Length: 140
Image 1: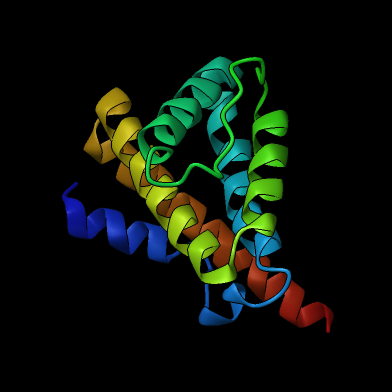
Image 2: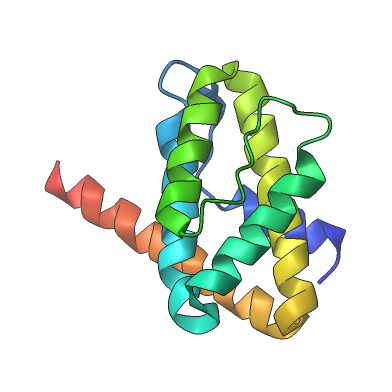
C-alpha cells in the first residue's frame, strides 16, 4: 500500500467540505467509531489503543491542541477526547488533523498487519460506510 492508496482509503471516510462547518466533529468521529468497531475484535482493545495513541503522538507536535493522556486505556475514552479536541478546533484545522491522524493510523496498521490485510479491512470499512449511507437514505 503506497501513499496514494492511503489517501484513497482515508478519502473514503465520508468527509465533505461541509464537515468543516459547525458540528464538524461528529462526522469525523463516526469514521473512527466504525474503524474501532471493525478493528477491536481483530487486534484487541489494547492494540487499537496502542495504534491510535502512537498515531496521535506522531501528529501532536504541530498540533498542541490534540490531547494525549496515557491514562486513557479504552477506545471509547480516546475517541471522546478526540471528539472534544476536534470540536474545539477550527473546522478546517479539525478536518486536516483528522485526515493526517487517519493516515498515520493506517501507516501504523499497515506496519503491524501488512498492506494486503490493511487494504482489505479498509475496503470492507468503506463498503460498510456505503451500505450505512444507503440505509439512512432509504429511511428518509
